[in-house]
Image (cartoon, rainbow, N blue to C red; front, side):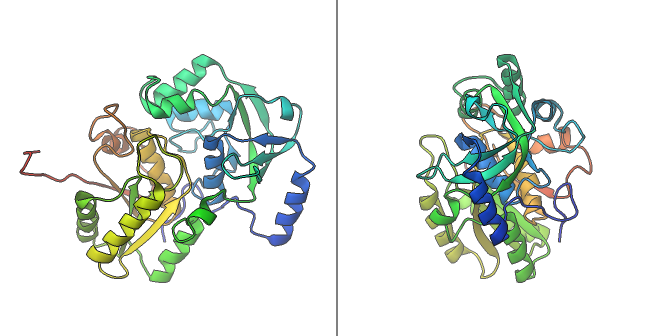
Length: 339
């Protein structure tokens, strides 16, 4: 099976040992607490589930700036989007070396993780704008990703984390949410070797179905993993539960048995277009896929990105050898519109 990004084996940060889990929960009650915003909570879920391998926690300011500008951490790891814990008010954790991180998206705000605080750094408006421009290609406040990112806070809280739960995703989507570990295991159980990932935040329409069939045929693949985003979206996007039902019916009717896995991941949509496409490639490699379909305006919104910018970034900005996963660039010609 394809190796994870940046390491020989996958290193999810979710604490699986029951005794250690209970010890950490008890310790969390004695620690200063930080209520995360949804973006930081989503990062914790992705770290816990193994999708953000080999990261061991939230990035510091130097890494965030370096990733934004060069797609590499300060130590040289290829990574396309900063993984941050941006905070408005750090008064409650000032001077603390170890803190409890609480879930903003679950009733009662249970502890999601314990964090060893490496640094609490102030980030300037100029630095936030610089990062936004690099990540999203714009600083337009009407862009939903920019609007979220620039209003998360002006303090970067960095350090390693131990994840204790994966927020609401396992409870709300028990048949769909899967960790990178679980997907790797199922791929192995099915005996698949060449595996294509399909990213979606929408119900799949006829062209999406055709892209999957095309990729299977041209790559002689063993299977497709339809991997849908289950976290927060912009207003007007289709709810995950509706999308899940639609996709499962499509797979039932139009794909041969044992050729498609319908799964999902716990992350909030960034709408970062090309940069998010590269992030999608990283964590699809981590979950065991050998190929990723990148279609028209992948991870885009409005008219902020060119139709195929998310494809060309892999040739323009991803160094040779940075990723093992291969990109299936999908374009379909329609005679109706002569394009």
